Length: 195
Image: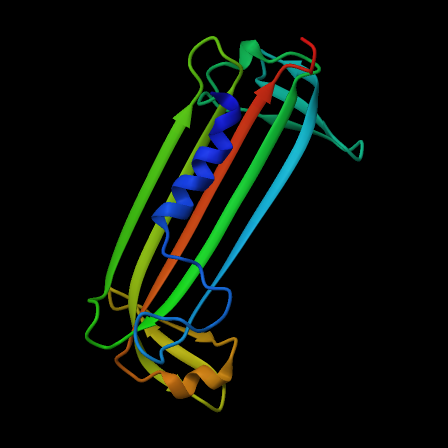
């Protein structure tokens, strides 16, 4: 089960997130820009010391760097961790931005979260995933500064610089912008190979 946690978290997020675009084209609204980006960072380390009373674990990465971390009460299976155990951590983040037509969506905010942990008595492992979607309205466009001002669902505004100034020709005040941010972290502790 533990070895499937990372794959499950990444698959769940990739299914739940609108398709990430590699370019700034392909929006559902004709001729409206869309873009996306995904990053996945993985880390492997070995447990080199444990202090159960202080709930501290010292990890050593492949480059020999050591770091001691304090674990909260959410890590319920700390007594199952032993020196020599391998720790795999993966962090996933994606952002998808899509300009919609002015009538395609109402300003709104939606959030989803999921948490899965190991069963009692197993080595610690788990995944945590979170997705936030905000639909904002383009309130102002400044072509001289290559910026747009977005008005959120609660009336707050934020001015942002656009990556591709040519896209300012494809948007208008009143257009809706859907921004989806997805994050997941998966942690898996296993005994050294051969044990």
